[in-house]
Image (cartoon, rainbow, N blue to C red; front, side):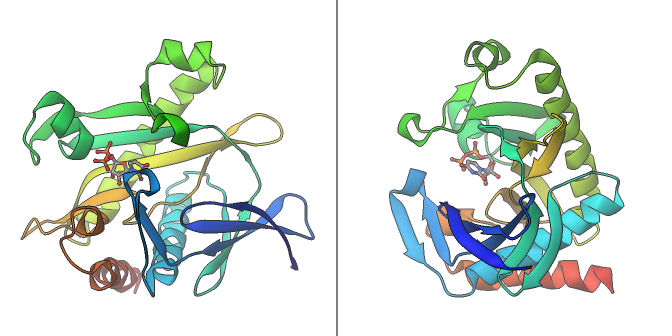
Length: 238
Ligand code: UDP
């Protein structure tokens, strides 16, 4: 596989063409951002940790029959993925109140939700990724009614599998964000990444944050924390 020209540069990843039109070469960067890019830092080791964690999680999801775009990890900070047309929605699943949910609805962080909640946000930096309801998604022609139903269903399936995974390594899955793409023939495929950048993970025994809130809230260094998540995932696999 040959690495071709840069196709897209995001906040945490660069996407490159390859000699196969359906395959994308991803490089995970050391950049950390929060507050829609207003807070930005280079953190040595972050790209490698997220690449390794996402690769392990996507392989695990495959073993649970949840199809996703991950093909294989190439190196410490690179992986190959299947090309899809990304749907501009952030699909958030919540099991426990935290972050923007706690703020908006004045529900203390850590309050268990009786059923998982699925929310959609429109990926649009200029608008600060506003929350959208089904009718907005239809009006904006982002996805069809059937696709919205499928996105909810798939997000809940991922939630079920991830709760089991993290529970087995003494981590409580508070909430997370997913992105999906459309394949050529139109079916939906889980894409992007699943890492401590995109999930809230609390240690089951101590409630310690093992995720990007450490960076967002200036609680310390994320590298040892992400390393701890990777160590637990790798130990589980042995
Ligand atoms: N999230 C993300 N990218 C975003 C916004 C949120 O990965 O652009 C994740 C975040 O890490 C958390 C979940 O989605 O696990 C819910 O985030 P929330 O809406 O509470 O927003 P925040 O408090 O992070 O602003």
